[in-house]
Structures are given as structure tokens and as C-alpha cells.
Amino acid sequence: MKRTATLFLLIVSIAAFPRAQAPAEQLDYETIGRIRDEGLNRSQVMDHISWLADVYGPRLTGGPGIMQAGDWTLKKFAEWSLSNPHRETFQFGKGWSLERFSAHMIEPQVQPLIGLPGGWSAGTNGTVVAEVVRAQIDTEADIERYRGKLAGKIVLTQPARAVSMLEGLIVHRMTPEEFAEAATTPIPAARGRGGRGGAGGRGAADNSLRQKIAQFYKSEGVVALFNRGGDSASASAGSNLDTQQQRTDGGTIFPSGNGSRAADAGQAVPSVTLAVEHYNRMTRILDKGLPVKVELNIQTKFYDETSPNGFNLVAEIPGTDPALKDEVVILGAHFDSVAHSPGATDNATGSAAMMEAMRIIKAIGAKPRRTIRIALWGGEEEGLMGSRAYVREHFADVTTMTLKPAHAKVAAYFNSDNGSGRIRGIWLQSNLAVAPIFQQWIEPLRDLGVTGLGPRSVSSTDHVSFDNAGLPGFQFMVDRLEYNSRSHHSNMDTVDRVQRDDMVQHATVIAVIAWNAANRDEKLPRKALPPPQRSNTTDADR
Ligand SMILES: [Zn+2]
Image (cartoon, rainbow, N blue to C red):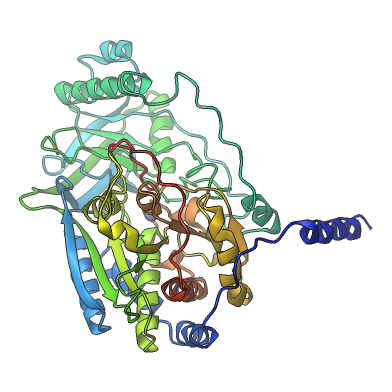
């Protein structure tokens, strides 16, 4: 009864809500049907993902894996007859790769340790055996307390963390309640004084203390630092429906503590994140007053930036309408991964979906009115570096909001970077004028599960670089599956976590959306041009 009444109210309220007076979109159903046929029945998306993650992962910017992956991808672009496949480079800093890692507890018993060095970690001096001690150093007073006591030791830098049982679902698909929530916009919290991170504020103080502590470890002659990762924090609370938490347990680790990639790279004490269970075991033995010894070998390699170490990959399907072919629809995703992961769901999936969308459109011989461009970014994990560099080079200097002529030619930018799930809708990025357009675009995709439009702005990946420059950039709304609980930035972000059927849908939906954007009479509407931004704003993928 209650249910019926609610439904009735819902129908009444929808009927009473004034429909947006947008002109009807002229959708090209014939081509959309062919895109769906090619995408759903002859998908190659899993093959792209396997090459990027299995064969070439990790794809850490500046390292050898991403370079090889780039070569492979440019070859695929050429194979599909995309136009002008090429790299565009940007300054990044030193590259890094892990050459060898092994760690064994050897006293009081032998246990191979699950763990991984943080990116840009220094190596050890060959295989070393060292006593393990606990020393949690968070303040200047802590530094003095431990002075002279840590030489030749491996230091456990955090307290043990209780591991809870794996209860409840760790696989996440959007529920009706979450669609309802996504359709709302939370009021942003007030930004008062004493906020985080301002120059000279708490952030700067934290940073200088962190540097002091790092120098202390170094001058003390510490062999290595072990941590057990974070405290199951939500991956990025708020805007992107992150209802689960990272599960830093069960052998899955989310290594933390990236070293410097600047000129001083490799100077700090080597740092390793261990599986929490192995870390906790050592703390419990130490608590009994018994010694723990570890045999450790870390070999790492640094790559100087003699020419720019960062690159983006770009190729096109040229437009055919004389009046519109200079305009461009850009499909983007970050191509790089973090240091310690094959990067299957973050973000071989997004890159492969964009590649597959291009392949589909090319394979059916469709001729878009506007140019469709694919751009796969490097350096996203370090602060959207590739997409920011690209926007700066081609469209706008956001520090002054000086626009280049090509700024006027961008019809739309679409991004994929939330893992292996089905596309369930599009975040509007507070660009309400696109709502009635996208509403019509998703109609022929409803049977594939695309139903949601979220008015709010979402952050943390490369569409932000476009949005910051006043360009219409959008991120897709996706089912997170195991992204937040298992795969995102973990050592277990392997192709096993990628769901084939979801990815087939994901790539097909993107191809349809790109087709619509490339063929409608007008570019997508834009928001007002934003004021100049600070250039050093980072909004790295988290
Ligand atoms: Zn990502």
C-alpha cells in the first residue's frame, strides 16, 4: 500500500516537473545499431586489456613498461587505420622500475613476506639481513627518543592494525538508492579558515616534519622502512559513489610512500609496504620481547630525464563535414598505472575501452562529421600531468585563462577511469545544459543498463583538466565492482579482476556516445569560462 502511494507520488511529481525545452536530438539509429552490433558481438576489448596489463604492466610513467605499451598501442592505431598515431611528450621527472624484490622473515621462523617497495624507492645494498624493530616517529620528540638506536635496523613505522573478517559484499553494482543519490547534488561543506594544505599552513608544517623524519632515518643508517599501508580509508569519499573501503588484507596490499622523482631521487631509505597480516605477525613477536630478523633484497632502477619522460598517445578518425571537421570529440583515459600493479582496472580498462570505441567506429566504416580523437594520458597518477600538459599545449593556459584557437573547436571530452564496471550513466559536471541532451542519448542504451545522469561535478581524474579550462569534460558513472575494495592501486589489480561482459558494454556505450557527439549539429553546451586557476593544483587519481 505504502509502496503504491509512493509510486503514485513519484509519477505525479515527474509529470509535474517541467520538461527541459531542448530540441529533439537527431539520433542516427542506423549507425548506433551497427556500433552496438560490432561492439557487442565482435569485441576485442579484453584482448587490448590483456596486452596492456598482462604483457606491459606496470605502466609507471617514465619506466620501461609504459614505453613498450605505448609502442604496442601506436601499432594498433596504425593497424586500425587511425590517422596520425603519435606520442606527445611532457616533462615528468625521473622514471623508475623495480628489478627484484624478495623479503623473508628468517627469525624466529622462516616466512616469505608479501610486500612491495613504494615507487621510486631506493634499493638495498644487495641481500641484507637485519633485525626488525618498532619505532613510530611522528614528532620531533620521537626523533630524539630514537636517536642512536636504529643503525642497521629495519623499522616497522606503524602500529599493528586489527584485521576484521571479510563480511558483506565486496563487489559493488549500483542500487536504485544509489541512482537516486547520484541524481542529487550535496551542498559542499563551507571552506573556512584553517583548511587543509595552504602554503605556510598545516600542510607545509607536515611536509617539513616528514622531510626531517626521512633525513633522520637516513642519517641513522636505517636499512629499510616497513609499513602495512593505510587504515582501510575510503578510496575517495563523496563524489563518486565510493561506498566500499579498501581491503588492505588477505594478501592484497595498497603500497604507499612514493619516493622523490626529482634530482634527489633514490636518496631516501628504502620503503616497503607489507601485507598487514605479515606485518602484524612481526609486531606480535616483538611484543613478546623476542627478536625478529628479515632477509631483504630490493633492486630498483632510475631513469634520468634526458628528454621528456612523460608522454600521451594521440590518434584520430578525421571528420568529414567541411563545416565541422575541424571540431573534435576527444575520448580520453589515463594510460599509466601506479608503480606496483599491472594496472588492469586502473586503467587498462579505460584505455582499452577508448581504443575499442575507436576500433568499432572505424571497423563499421562510419564517417563522423566531426573528428574523433583518442588521447591516452601519461602521468595521471602523479597529478593529471599528461592531460594538463595537453590542455596547456593545445587549448588554454589556465593560470591566465588565455585561450588558444583550438579551444573553440572542442565539442566534448569523455573520460573513463573507474574500473571494469558497466557504464550506468554520465556525470554532468554541473553542466546542466547537457542534461536534456544526454537524457536523449541514453535512451537507445537503456537496455544495456545506462539510465543515470548525475548533475554534480566529480573529480580525481583527467576530465578535470578539461573542465578547469572551461571545456565540456565528462566522466562516466560506472559500477565499481571490486575497484574500491580490491583492485584500485593494489598489487592484485590484475586482469582476473576485469569482468568481460561489463567491459564489452563499457566500450560499446562509449562508441555510441562519441558518435552522437561527433554528429549533432552543435558542439555540446559549455559552462561559463572559469576564473584563472593555480597551476600547481593537483587532483591525482586516488
Ligand atoms: Zn585511474
